Length: 182
Image (tube, rainbow, N blue to C red; front, side, top):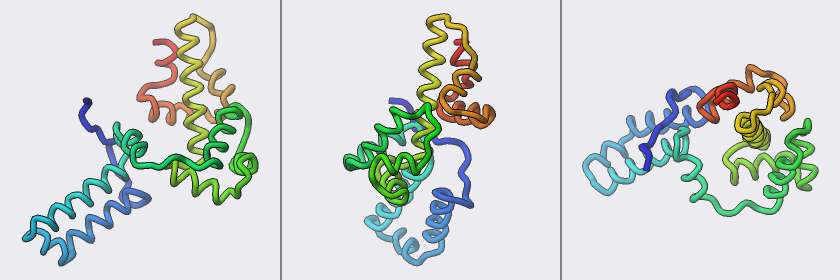
């Protein structure tokens, strides 16, 4: 097994980072925590809370596996939305297109994706597109096909190449040009 590696940096002003910060501040300043130091059972529970919230809140190399084991199967409308995204990811689709196909409201779509996928529908779409770009780049590299990162990115719906490159690097830990050229 690989060692646990967290992404560097945690934004303590927003989202999961803010929730983590507030939890730590609460525990540091509460009488409950002071009592927990004297009782092994309470101390173990506080430790479990801190570790669990960090593992679920801060991105790391085992996060997908951790979230996958903790989830129940996605309902039909989420699976329909995922299938629609997979089939139409090269097209200019948005949340309302996906929701209409799954026969639910945009709000229910967001809620379902947050609960069962741990992300938003548009972030899921971006991930699918990134995976398709990577497949095409790897295939071009292995077959010797002449293409460019720009051509492949544009074909999969990425219009802002700077944002695309940053997202690709975050996801795959290398630049798309490195994938293409080996």
